Amino acid sequence: MLCVLALLSAIAPLATDMYLPGLPTMEKSLDTSTTSVQLTLTTFMAGLGIGQLVIGPLSDGLGRRKLLIGGTALCAVSGVLCAIAPSIGVLIAARLLQGFSGGAGIVLARAVIADRARGDVAARLFSIMMIIGGVAPVVAPLMGGALLGPIGWRGIFWVLAGAATVMLIGVLTLVPETLPAERRHGGGLTALVGNLRYVVTNRVFVGYAFTFAFGFGALFSYISASPFVAEHVLGLSPGQFSIVFAINSLGILAGSIVNTKLIGTFQPRQLLTFGVGLLVTSGALLTLATTIGGSRIWLVLPMMFGVVSSIGFIMGNATALAQGQVSEAAGTGSALMGACQFGLAAVVSPLVGIAGADTAVPMAIAILASGLIAMTSLKVLARAA
Image 1 (cartoon, one colour):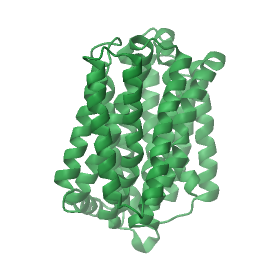
Image 2: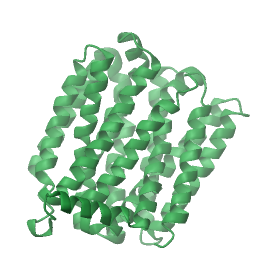
Image 3: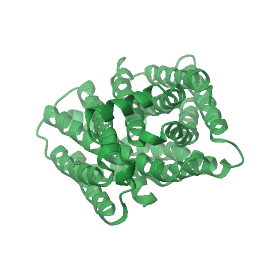
């Protein structure tokens, strides 16, 4: 079941990283602009945020399984719509639907674990889930780079539709209902508002949720800008970019593995503090490398690796610590975390390209700013934990 939940959570890296090598090709194929192509990332992330905000609270009243089945089925259908989109406008709309439906898997995977575990156990499970799901950002760009030539960017979306179908089969066969009827809060507006109030008034939860969201904001600043930085600034080919992206993604995997081993020896908050510190340090050095360092490849790539590696210490621990604060409304808490996470990603995506495709400075500044806000959230809002 944990493997299935990890794959459901991996819909974001699968649906972004696989087609990243094809963004410049899509720009030419659909006769559109760089900004318009990047909007396919923005709308997907916005959809993920909105979907989680709707589906998470509903699951506290209706249960997890039915919503998970419906969302995963719709994700497969939306993948087909992306594959056959005749224009950039249709593709943007289909990506919004793909994000909305994919949000079900992400928000409910977190809620299912929160239904079953607390404390160090939850932190370890979330970290293990990140290890399993961490294979996706490693494999996805390599697959995307390899498939782009033979089947094109449309073929990549057909592959994503097939992957969603496999996930649906996994949900149907391996994921039971984890929220029994006696623990549900009802589906009415009063219960929904009560759950939202319970979650948003918990300052410590908000602090951990912001740390989680801005950690992801730093990661997505890198994800959305990296194909253009790699090809236009560092001079790499699409194939070379796929390899570099996969190597950097190993940083998340390695960080998650180390984090899992250290839980029990160190508290999740201590490991989270280390991860945020690594993010801020790497972001600051990356900013220097892209400004006074002249964006030399041997300066930029190691700092990118440091940024990505820090995420392995941030996401799992922040999730467990936040969800532990609102265990009586795990779906609503998970939804708000996801809405912050992907809503922020939707804002970041066009900003990192605001100065054009020939500079890495906006990406570096966005990473550093996200890291500093994550650190402030941890130190100020979540200080009572």
